[in-house]
Structures are given as structure tokens and as C-alpha cells.
Amino acid sequence: MDEAVEALAAVRGPDAFLHNVMIRGFADAGLPAGALAAYRGMLEDGARPDRFTFPVVVKCCARLGGLDEGRAAHGMVIKLGLEHDVYTCNSLVAFYAKLGLVEDAERVFDGMPVRDIVTWNIMVDGYVSNGLGSLALACFQEMHDALEVQHDSVGIIAALAACCLEFSSMQGKEIHGYVIRHGLEQDIKVGTSLLDMYCKCGEVAYARSVFATMPLRTVVTWNCMIGGYALNERPDEAFDCFMQMRAEGLQ
Image: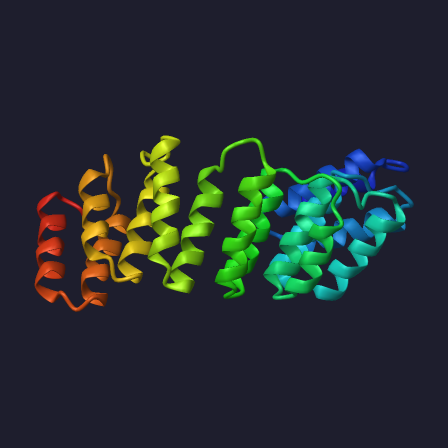
């Protein structure tokens, strides 16, 4: 990145595109503080941030827990008339949810004239990450009613995590039915999430059934099943599952 910084410094009056390249470069390199410094440099140069700037900047603020800088970026979004851009707003919803400011996330979410499937998934996951399982499931249902497209694996996984929070195997079974009807049961992450949900809700027989029909199992899947047996006080089955895992050559 040092060479990139030097190259940008040699450009007279770099435009927003070049600044955005620099900001994203720092972010992609795992240097969120550098990305925010590049953003401040963009403002100092008088370049106008755009819809490609703020999603990266706000994400970096979230990674650093930078509430003040994130709020300042939000203010700039409004000043520049970008508060209706779905990609920018998605990043703001995720930012506030990650910092535990659920009401702020809801305000951005409620003010969006257009929401895509990513928006809804972020809001559902935001509720889950803040321990609000019932709100997450209500949002998931509202999402189902509002969108004409089917849920994707990201939303399904978040909703199943909400079922775990609420110990609601009934709603988990409804989601499982949706998964089967829409051919999502082959997704290993969805399958593992179903397994985890049934185990945490005490439905070991259902968990075992999901596990037995999974076309592919990772170490995470096996660990989930072993842990599920242990959680439900079935140590013999947990040990048998562990031995089967070893017999299949998994470490």
C-alpha cells in the first residue's frame, strides 16, 4: 500500500474514483484504520464521496467500533443526498446493528424506500447478534411477505439462529419445510444450521435425521452433532459419533 499512497500523492487533484480505489485497497488489505485515513484525505482534497465510498467506509467504522466516525459518515450520506441508496443504507444498518444500536439500525431500515434481500438479511441478523430472537423471526416473516423472491441461505441461517435464541423448534420446523421445498437442504451451511437448531431445541431425533441425510459433512458439522448429543445428555452417542468421525478420516 505504500507504493499506492505515493502514486496517489503524485496525482494532481485526484478524483473520487482514485480515492475510492485507495480506500478499498486499504480495506481489502485488512487495514480499516488506513481506509478511514484515506477517506479523511479524500475529504481534505475536496473530492466528493459517492455511493461507492460509504459502504466501505462504514464497514471499516464497524470493524473498528468507531461510532463517532460512523455517525459522521452517516451525516455526510444525508448531506450528499445518498440516504436512499440501498447499498449505502445496507452498510449503515449493519454498522449500527454491529455496535448494538438496534434502534438506530431500525430507523435507517424503516426509512429506506427500497429494500433488497440483503437489507432484510442484515436486519434479521442484526436482531440475532443482539439477542433479539423474537424480533428476528418477526422480521424474517415480514421479509417473506414483502419480497417476491425466495429466501437465500444467508437469511435462512440467521432465522435458524433466532430459533435457537427462542428455543422454538416449531418455527425451526417451518423453516426446515421451506428449506426442503426450495431445494436448499443441499447447502452444507444451511444443513449445519438446521442441525444446530434442533440440538439446541432438544430435538435430537430431528438433528440426527438431518445429519444422516447430509450429502457432505465438514468438521464443523461433526462437532455440531457431537456437541448436540452432549448438550442433550447423551454421552454414549456423542462418543460413538466422535469415533465415527475419526473412522471417516476427519481430524
